[in-house]
Every structure is written in C-alpha cells, then in structure tokens.
Length: 311
Length: 311
Figure 1 (cartoon, rainbow over the protein chains, first blue to last red):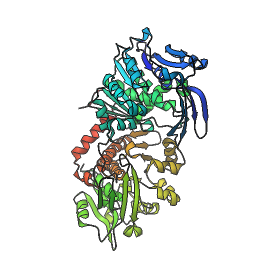
Figure 2 (spheres, chains in turn blue, cyan):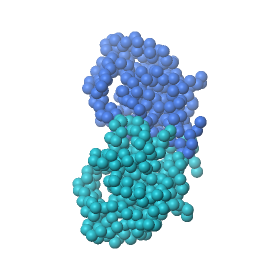
Figure 3 (tube, each protein chain N blue to C red):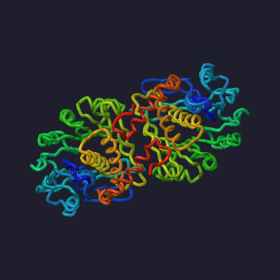
Figure 4 (cartoon, each protein chain N blue to C red):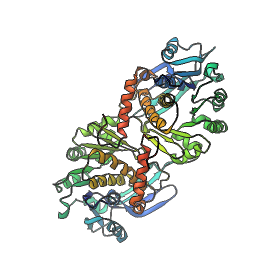
C-alpha cells in the first residue's frame, strides 16, 4: 500500500450470510457489500467503515476486519440481531442466484452517521442501500473528490426519484447490465450508459459478472474483461470486491483519471475473480499483493495486442 | 486488400434464409456460413468458394458474390433446390434463436470437390459441415499452412470420433462456449480449451456472441471483446463473418502468428458487429475498408490502458 494513499469511506451493509450451492454450504459467514468492499479496498488504501451490526456479531468477524487497515469507529453496534441473508446458487458455473431469505434486523433502522474523523474523506463508496440514506452520507463529506455509488433493482422499482437525485451528485454510478437497461429504457449498453451520464455523473460502470464490465465516460469506453475463472465456490460479493479494488486504485493514485480508472477496472476484475474462489471473504483475505499483481499482469497480457508476452 | 494476400479457401453452406424477429422478417435472402464468410474475408484477401446450390439459386445472389474477389469455380450447381433455413429470434437484444425449419435439399448429398486451381490453397476454413466432409477437404489441400474449422452441437452429439480426428489435423478449432463445455466435459473455458488443445490444434477460439471471444494457445490467452452494439436487426452469420475476418487477417499477413491472430480477433469482432446490423449480408456488403478500420481503431481504444486516446 502506498504511504500517501488516501483513506476510502464506505457506507453499506455488514451481514451474516448463509450460502448454498449444489455441493456445499456455509452459514453465519461474514457477508454484506461493505465487508467485501473493505477487505478488497484495504489491499490498496486504508478504509473507513460506516455500517451497523447487532450484539450477536461474532467477535472473530470483528477481529478479522480489525486485522486490516479498516477503521471501525463508524461501525455501530445496536441491540438486536445482525442483518442476515440466505441464498442458493445453481447453474453450470453457479451463475443463477435465488435469494431464499432476508432478515434486515438492526439494518432496518440504520442511518449512516459519520464520526468526525471521517468527514474529510476524499474517496467515497456508497454501497447498495436506500438512495435516501446514500444522500444522507453526501451531506457529511464536504471534501469528497470522488464519490461512487452502487444500487439494486429494488430501488429502481421503488425509489427512482431518490436515485435520480443521487446520480446527479456522484462522480461514478455502478450498475449491472439489467439495471442499466431498466433505468434507461434502452436495450443496448452504450445507449443506456449515455442516458445515465445525462443525469450528471462523469463515469458510468456497467457490471456484467463473468462477462466483464464496461466503463463509460463522455467520450470514451473501456471494456474490462472478467478474469477467466478456473473454479467458482461462492459467487457472493464479486461486484463489491470489484468496487473495492477500483476505489482502492483511485485512492492510491490520488485521482480518478482515465488511466487510473482503466487499470482500476482490471484490479476490480482480479479481486472479483478471487472473491468467488471460496466462501465469504476467505480467498480475499488469503491473497497477498503479489498474488494480485501477478493476476493483474496476466490479465493485462490477455488484452495486449503484442505478439509476444511482456516479461 | 494487400496485393500479396494469399487466397483463402472456404468450404461450407450457401443457403437461402428466412428470418423472423418480433418486428421484421426477411425471406429467400442469401445465407449460409460460407456466404457470410466469403463476403467478410474478401474484404481482406481473395476467396475461393466450395459449396453447392440448386438450380433455383437466384442470379442476383450469384452476381453479388461475383462482384467481390470471390472465385466461384468451386460452386457446384445441382438439379434441385438450394439449402433453406428458417429461424426466429427473440429476447431484448434478439439473443435467443429458434430454428423453425431446415431443408437440406441439394446440400444433403454434397461432397466437397476442389477445382485443381484451388489445390495450392495455404489458408483454409472448414465451415460447419459434417466432420467427415471436412476431413475430405484436407486430402485435397496438400500445401495448407493454416487450417481452421468450425463445428456445431449436432456433430458433437452424432459424430464425435470424426471431430476428434479433425481436431488432430487442423491448426485452429473454433467453437462456441456451450460446444467447448460439452466437448471437453469441463465447466470453465480455460480448462475446456486445454482439453481441445490436447487433441493437437495450436489455437482454440471460443466464441461467445455479444460477450466476445477467447483465443487460447498453449501458453497464452487473448480476450477479444465484442464491439458494443447500438442495434441488432438479424444476428445470423455473426460467427461466420467473425471467422472470415480472422482468416482474412491471417491471409493478408501471410502467417498466423500471435500478433496477427490477436488483431484478427478484433477484426472478427468488427465484422461480426456489422453482420448483425442488417438482414442477411447487407451491412457487410455496404461496408468499406475505411468503416472497418475506423471501427477497429475504436475497439483498440476500448481495450487500451492509456489514459488518453491515440490519435
């Protein structure tokens, strides 16, 4: 990690997940968008977490986060149970997901409150929560220079006006392809991205899982491939690990220029590919920066037009 | 077209297609893998066609092929009707295909017979026909230096031994992702490609439609994105137009080195993206080399890690 990397603020969910695949299961494992984001981003820069857990949140999970450069001052602990989420994956490469159960618990009344020490955050990630809560965060980061947000289909269906206000105020909107099509009313991704860009963000990132992701700015497009997988054990959290690496690259560079974003997309693909290789955040935790750089340099070679491999 | 480009031999189907989409239809239009291949490849190098049509094959379609550098000496005209194929596309981006009718007609008894003048062909494309017929071609091209073959699920199901013999004797196997998974028994594409490579070809290309295509050699991988689409009118023939451009690039360069193949994959994406923008081969015919080079340079920019666009 660069000594001058700026801290990244993330606001989102910390959960206890139960995940089932045709051959394996795991339960009460660390989950939630902010958890995946934290552990990915903290490979690149210090992270400041704002989230809520219940009194039942396992000490081992807290210690895991504390073992990384993750500031937990903003992690609220409330009476009651931690947010729980249960899902089942199927399909040849576990590409089909069915959510079996969602228990919001203490997350239901969550409001993001930033500790004073977080208010100078320059790089901010608003993970998928209600747009109104994402907007509350914006009031508390007057010095922010690069704000990215994620969302989900639920908010497109139920909170579109809030989303539109949010999109006007962030630098980077991240959505998946179905959300981009639904929000824009356009069938093709370049047109869909142009509609979202028209709301104001400088950058739109459309995530397509194992099919890679696309980065749109006003006058350029970058097509980031997913890192080809050799195995998948648990697809949960790939998108949030992707976002963590992308914001990590921005924080480390100190700016969100096109070169940083393009390389950041590839770091995102690398962390996304790691995330799915084991349950929960296990594989991300096991990775060293050397593993990440090696996988990145493979991926760079896989999009190079040179006839011989760079050494 | 370079003056020293080598001619490309293609053996495959020429058909009359009927295509239905939710909003449009076309019938008795020029179709068949070899037609798309010819018109794409002939942007880069002269093409030698071996195929069969019936006595009903429209003079206008023949004239269209003749208007390009396509040698029709090997186009057999047999008593009876031309191969006919009818399909319907559906889905948001017409990604779902249903074959409604296939009438083999004169194609049923087709055997590829090369005119003497074709026997010195160096670059050869065996479009999707029975593996036994593809093998018959190999006996007639003793000087071939780069042979690529396509196939389809039907032959995986019914003619696997022939396919295995074919794969041992070609330089480049092209399959789609489902075929690669079925043939190899491997869920993930890198493992699937390694299985196919183990039969002998130096190159395996796995096509994934709007999700791009992958080029595998023994020690490297290239991930070619599809060109992002703004419209789709008729998805037929994209894969054959892709193959035409790839082999065209090889013929133009005079060899199938890694740099030629990588750039050829992008030319393939460009011709594939053109093919789907109108019914039949219309959009390919309308394209000038300037259009193709402009779209290629856009695509190169979309995978570049440079922060500023090359002029």
